[in-house]
Amino acid sequence: MSSTPLRVSGLIVVLSLGVLALGAFPQGDDTIKVDVDLVNVLATVRGKGNALIGGLEKGDFHLFEDGKEQEIKYFTREVDLPLTIGLLVDVSGSQERLIDTERRAASQFFRSVLRPKDLAFLISFGKDSELLQDSTSSPKLLEDGLKELRLSAPVGGLHPGPVPTQQNTAGTVLWDAVYLAANERLRSEAGRKVIVVITDGVDTGSKKTREQAIHEAQLADAVVYSVYYVDNAAYGGGLVFGGSGEGDLKKMSDETGGRVLKVDRKNTLDDLFKEIQEEMRSQYAIAYSPTNPKKDGTYRKLEFKMSNKDYKVQARKGYYAVTN
Image 1 (cartoon, one colour):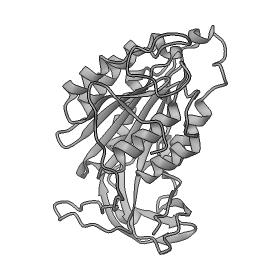
Image 2 (cartoon, one colour):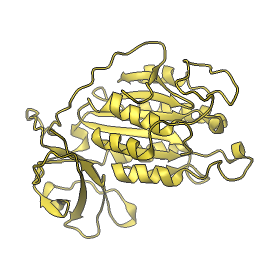
Image 3 (cartoon, one colour):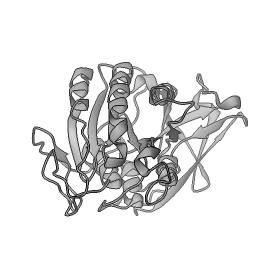
Image 4 (cartoon, one colour):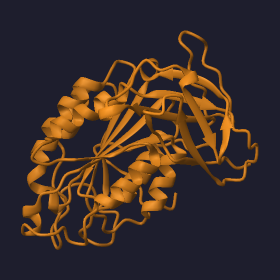
C-alpha cells in the first residue's frame, strides 16, 4: 500500500487484502446470499422533534440513484446484523487533558453496545496511527487497549510507542487513521460497519486527504460518527490552531451517513456515546441492485424519499461503482 502503515501495539498482523464481494443482508433466518452487484445502505429515520422512528417496512422507503428509483431487494432492522465498530481516538497534544475521560466513557460504551456476534477495534492517532486492540468481541481486551492510550509526543519529544511512520515529530494524522481503519480493518467485514472518531478535527501531517479518507470509508460501506471534543485550554482559551475542524468532520460524517456530535456543557462524552448507541439500534439495512450496470468506478448519488413526508432519512449521500 502507498499509505502510511498502521502500527500495531504488541504484535504484527499480516493482512490479506483482496476484492470484496458485497454480501446481501440476511432476511431473518434465511441463508445469506451473495450478489456482487448489490449496494448496501444503512439508514436512520427521524420524525418530528428529531425522534428516531422504528417499526418501518420496506414499502415506507423509496430509494433513488442518480434520480432513478431503485427496487429495494433486501430490508431488515439492525438487530439482525452483526456489527463491527472501529473507535479512533485523537492522542495529539491538544487532547492531553481529555484522554482519561475518553478512556472511561469508551470502556462503558463497549460494554453497553457489543453483543457476542459483534466486533470492535481500537486505534489511537497523533503523529502516527497505532492499533491498540485488533477486532474482538471482548470488552475486557478493549479495556486493556484503552489503558494504552497515551499522549503522542510533542514537537522535539520522544515518541513513547512504536517507531514514528512520519518524518515529522508531531502531528494529528486524522485522515490517515480513518483511511487505514476503513481499508485495513473494515472492507473485508460483513454486516454493519461503523467508525467512531473522537477528535477536535484538526489534521496535520496526514499523507491522505479528507476526500481520500471519505472515499475509502464509502468503499468499505462504513458509517462515520464524529465526536467533536475540544479542550480550548490547550489553545490558550482561543481558537483551535489551524482553524476549527468541525466542518471537516461534518463533511466526512454527512457523506458516509453518520453525523457530528459535539461535547459541550449540555452533552457529556457519555451522553454522546449513548446517542450513537441508540442510533445504531434504530438503523435499517437496505440493499439493492442498481439499474445502472456499468462498472466504471463513477460516483453515484443516493437519495431517500419517505412515504411519510414528515420523516427524514440519515444515510450516505452516494457510493462509488465497482470497476472491472
